[in-house]
Amino acid sequence: MENTLERIVDRVYQEGISRAQDRAAAITAAAEAQAAEITRKAKDEAAQITAAAKDEALRLLRSADSDLKLTASRALGSLRNEISQLLAAQAVASPLSAALSDVQFIKDLFLKLAENRDGTGLMLSVPQGQRDELVRGLSGLMQGRLKGLEILAGSMKAGFVVRERDAGFELDFTEPALLEFLQPHIKPAIASLFRSQNG
Image (cartoon, rainbow, N blue to C red; front, top):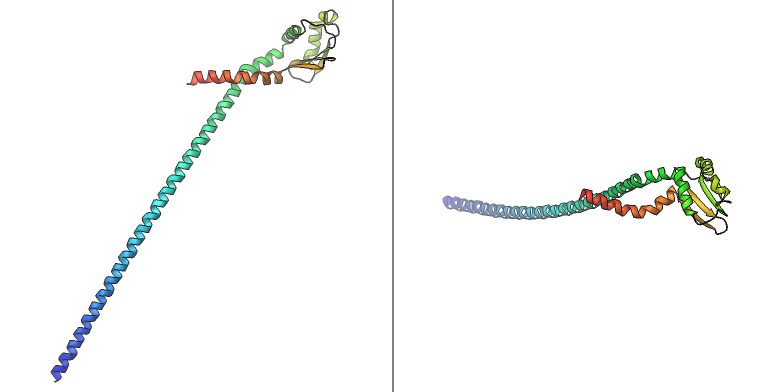
C-alpha cells in the first residue's frame, strides 16, 4: 500500500509538473506571440512615421526649392532693373548734365524755343553760376528782338525754365525734368541692347 501511495503521489507529482510545464509553455508561447505582435505593430508604426517624415521632408524641400527659385528670380529681375537704371544714368544722365551745364547749349536751345516770339513777358531761369554768362551771350538780342526778356538765377543745378507771365505757362528743361521725360523711352532701348548682348 505504501508503494501504491507512493506511486499515486509520484503520478500526481508528475502530472502537476507536466501541467505546470504545459501551462508555462502556453504562457511563454502567448507572451512570445504577444511580443511578436507588439514588435510587428511597432515596426509598422515606425515605418509609417518614417514615411510621413520623408513625405514632410520632401514637401519642405520642394517648398524651399520653390521659394529659392522665386527669390532668385526676383533678385535677378531687381538686378537687371538696377543695371538698366545705371546704364540709363551712364548713357543719358551724364551727357545730359554736361549739355545742360553748357551755357552755349542753353543759349542755342532757348533761341530755338523763342525763334518766333519776342521777349515780352518771357522769364528765363538758369542756375546761379550761369546767369551772368547767359546775360552777356544774349545781351545783343535782349536789346532787339528779345527786348523784355528777364533772366533770373534759379535754384536748379543744370538746365533752365522758361515762363511767360501773361500766358501762365512754364517749360521745364532742368535735368530732373528731362530725365523724367526721357526715362520711359530709354529703358526699353537699354533693355533691348542688354538682351541682344547677353542672349
